Structures are given as structure tokens and as C-alpha cells.
Length: 486
Image 1 (cartoon, one colour):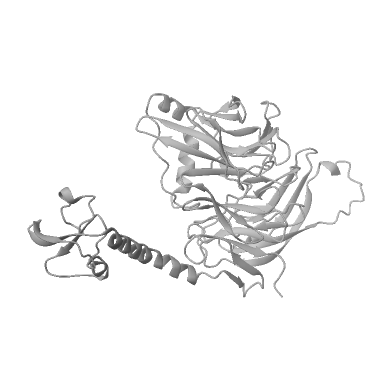
Image 2 (cartoon, one colour):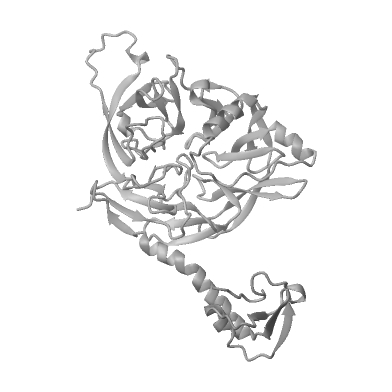
């Protein structure tokens, strides 16, 4: 079927001087589609003209007819989306687990944030998500969705003090690149510019009292930008786990590109360098309670790096969090507990064989390791606000735990291994406290494609676990109720 839209001639026709004018072009053969019939309602005068060797009738269209045509086209274009939405349930009980699941998002392509990015306002009422049209807030009580920021931004986190959402926006031309940080009030939508970043800088964290941002300066990119050769825009999203990602990680690590770990003052814009090196600084996150404690990682293939580190915002107290004791031992995907006392991380001793969620107390140095079965290993873990429950998002068929890993949203209840030493060991306080997870399956993700990582988080009231999934095709934001449905 041929289609005519306002201000455009039929496909393949030479628009010439008609470009932009309110004209409909009708083939002399009289072949009309549905859209043509809408346009044919015009009472305007027409004239026959030869265009590209074919005789065509050029009709002037009234504004009313143009409105009808545009409205028809919009209805046709949105019909598949509406039909698709009807195919995705708003709420159901998982038949394999007995837990209630709800779809929180409306727009296909919506996603919850990365597992360690705080998405919740301090009052626990709203959840920030990304959508194809920008950033939106979901009211967790009413489930109403409100757009907060237009598209073209990269979200950082929701501030733990003010509840404002922080994000970056880039302005790119052929020979320049400027990146600025903004904060928008989730309730009033009032927006302020926080800082313009120096060339080559990116930021990905905001501290507990919202006085500092943290990120890196890539010295290679900084030099190119200063010379009028900014790097191109990032490639279109290929998903979280994509073919060739392992090779990319190997090549990027081998590059040994000079980087600076930095903070940016949110009031003055002052940039301070905490650390310089050729390690790949990444996964940068502040303690949720201590404004002066910053965690970061040495990115790359986990078996080739000493991954998790902390540093103070004055540049002191650089600390490696985990020291391997066997070859091919790996750890990563580190995150803070909500009270800031514990750092948690995925630990495998060795890689792909034995699985733990390891914890490190940042004040005392005490350690606790929770053991998991292979089927319970997850790409990412998270912990409830009171530290009593944990969650995991399972793993795909090509994961580090495959074959034998599970594709589920998991709830984990921790249990300590009883201490029967009766205090007879002189070094007992130096030893790792062993524990286990008792797993419960919440959502069957057998139809989920793990090129998108679900990234679980607990809602502040600890009644739901939020995750993103493509189990019905398009990506949406979902939540599963921790308590089983009656």
C-alpha cells in the first residue's frame, strides 16, 4: 500500500519546489490506499503535472484535511505499541513460585537503573527509571508515572539528601565536546546546572551529602578534545552482555590508558585528582552514609586484576578490599550496604567453581562469606535496607556459572554457620565468618534474554524487589512481591 503524508510527495517522487508545501500527490492511475482516501477529501483545486515522467495530480490540502491525515498516521503508528502493551500483563502471579509480579513501566524500552545506582527518593515514595523519552518517576504507592527529564541525558543517581536526580548532558559539535552535570527536583522539576566538566571527564557518583561528584579524567580523550578532535559518540547500546565483550575487556586493559580518579565540588566546580595511573578505574560509587569514602574498581577480566578498592576524598587511605589466595580466584560487582558499614561483592574460589557473596566491614575489617549453590549464582546481588535479606538476578546460559546456573529472581535469607570453637582459637577474630544463603525463587526468567542484566534492588519498604526484564520482548520495569500471594 502506498502512503501519503502531509508535506511529502509519494515515495520516490521528486519533491522539487513542492518540498515543505501542503500538497498531496495522487498517482494518475488512481491507486489510492487508506491514507490516500483521507487526503482525497480535499476540496482544493488540483492540477496535473509530469513528475519523473509520470502524470500526477497535485492537490492543495486544507489545514483540516492535513490534521486528519496526520492524526490518522499517528493512530496507525501507535497501534502496534498499544497492541504490544495489551500482550504484556500488568500484574500476575508467577505459577512456578507463587509470588505476585507487577509491571511498573508503560513505555517499551523502559529500564530500572544499574544495581548500585540509587534510584529511590529519600522518602521512599518514588523510583526513577529511564525511558526512550528521558527519565521518569514512578510513584510506588499509586504506580503513576511522571516524566521528569527529556531524553539525551545519562542518569547518575538520585541524591540521598535532596532526592534530586543527577545526570549528565553532552553538547557535541564537529570539533568540540562539552559535558555538564545537572540536578532536577523530582517534584517541582526545577533544574540547575551543577558543573561543567573539564575535557575528558565523566562522573558517575554523588556522595551522601551531595557536596561531591566522582569520576575519571581520561588523559587521552582530554588531549584530543583540547586539540579539537573529540571522540565520537558512544556506540548504540549492544546490551549488557554482548558477543565480543570479553575481547573488548582484554584489549582495553592491555591499552593501559592514563586516567585520573577525580572529585568535583558541586558548589564551586573545583576538580581534585585523588589518584593517577594506568589501571582502568571504573564502577565508582560513594558510601551511602560517609561523604568522604569512595569505592572504585580496577576494571578488566576479573582474573587479571586486583579489583575492589576504597580511597578517602582527600586522597588518603587507599585500601585494597580483597586479596586473592588462590590462582584464578575472582571477585567483583561490588556494592555498599544501605548503612554504609559493609561492602559486598561476588566472589568465586576459583572462577566458575565455588560461589560466594563476600562481605567486608569498612570500620572493623571483619569479613563474612555467604555460600551459594551454582544454580543460585547471580550476575548482580543486592541487600535490603536493614541488611537482613539479599536478592540476586540469576544468570544466562553463557554466564560464568553455566551450565547449571538458574534463570530466576532470587531471594536469599542468610544463615551463619554455628561457631563451635568456644573461643579457643586465639586468632578467631581474624578469620572469615562462614555463612550460607537459603534461596527462594521469586520470578521465572527462563524467557528473559540475559544480554540485558535484570539488576535487582529492594524497595525502601523492603516489600518488593524491582528489576528490568525483556521476558515479554521489549524491556520493561517490573517488581515482585517478597511475600507470597495468598
